[in-house]
Image (cartoon, rainbow, N blue to C red; front, side):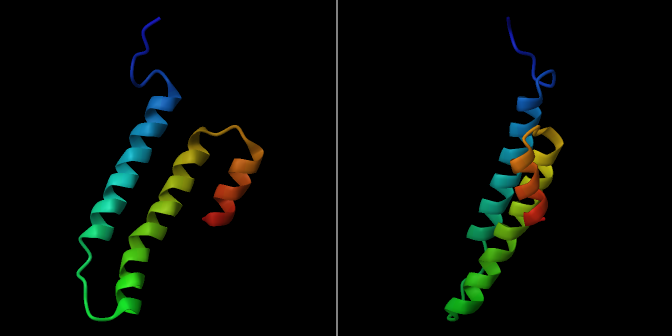
Length: 76
């Protein structure tokens, strides 16, 4: 049976997941590098952690796993 995008929650989950991941990678790699390792690290970690929260919100829409829900809520 052919799967039609939008009729399977996995497609919706993965679409959002890859959008979040792609945005995070763009923001991390486009962060302006300075001579401060500490500043650069923090600048790159902001989109990384923002993406972690977005990914948790995304998984909470679809998971039926209690431990995964608990982990995602804890991260948020």
